[in-house]
Length: 121
Image 1 (cartoon, rainbow, N blue to C red):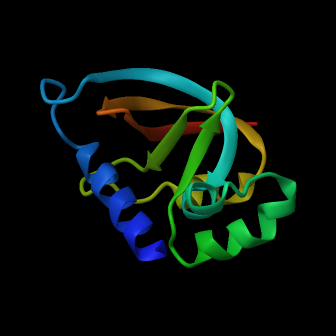
Image 2 (tube, one colour):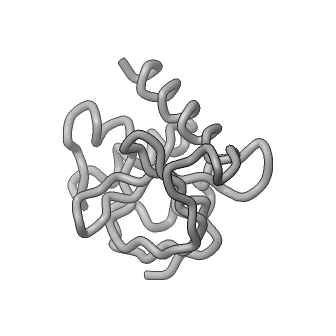
């Protein structure tokens, strides 16, 4: 199950490099929400302070992190560059915290990706 979620997350991250004419929406924006471990959240709804240690283990293993926005939307995260590296290094210290992430937001078929420029608590 984890490998399927990771594969899906990597495909969505790769889609972040597509041109704006192929994406439904692409714009600079900021997103406020909790830093989550995408795999555990999607597979089991795990989040919050009680899940921080597990999320750290998953992040250290290379599983993707995301943002669960205050609106309930999930944003996959990527760093800058091509191919887009994970944003794990920028978010690892903020697991289970509420942050504001600034960057380019791309949306396609209901999936959202934010290429992280800045993270603030």
